[in-house]
Length: 452
Image (cartoon, rainbow, N blue to C red; front, side, top):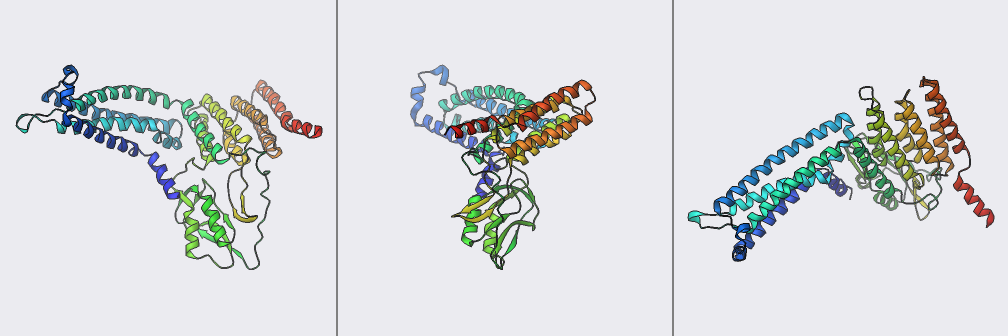
């Protein structure tokens, strides 16, 4: 299953898969229309000579012109895409290039131009005249003319799409929306629906004589996907406990420990292979099961914007705003326990993210690069205030309070303006009061319980 997921992810991010499907469809369409013409539809089409009355030379000339033009447009389109990729990589971060490659719009546009070119070649080959007999597939030729007009409209739309796609707001919003969708899929339960967080204090006790045995990785790379069901199944079949030593998004080195399994004797090769196949390791990270990578992309854009060579505070502010939206989506959601049980028996000790780790991933490096930048510090405090109003979990509120303290330390050390320090202190005081007070959600629940 992991191999299928990885294959599908690679196909989705390729510039050849979708265009190839469109080219195959265009070949089938051309052959179907040619067969319709050869089946006797010319008598019916003869009633509209101005639309379907092209002769042999006229049909050949038009199909040749359209085919040549479409091939030129394909070259121009590829050039535009390469320029955009280079610009996005240098201006923002190279980690967003895969998002451009996964764009269905770009893939479909390339497929349309290549499909029109292929369609014209097929129709052009079927046109006959002179000694070999006269045959002009009028319906197919007319449809080629319609496709050419559609290609012109597609080119105009694509130019507009490219100009819009390289805007910082669109890039950041696209990554944020994808990350939010991943969070909604990975963590569907609300806090009150699942078990309490911090139930991960369980220490697995092994039977006498049992030890942890290491299972090595077969290759170098980042862990993209973990098949949790398969991992649980291996632990159940072996009647033991499996402990993940590397989590989603982490880099693993070949022949180093990937997971550990508790057994009396070392595991056999079949068990080792089964455990290794539950992990998909590749050369790059993806967002499919790795919400932290979506956050990482936005943080990288913010760091590039805050670099001395660019100094684009507005883009960094947008990054903080969208990071707030991501964390707000996570604020009320229950992150599953890392201890996976089956029939009250501990089977898997997983390794995954927490709200605190994602909060650190979002704000730590941006704060470290915001020395003396009043605007970024102020916006980060506003973000913490927004998050504080959405969550009542004490541990999460303490994590927010820690970030308030760190921002206060940075502001006191790096802000030179007395006016800016005074304004920041007002915000910091408000944030501390809000986080140290009892959240409104808890007060409502206590009142409801007392009335009951």
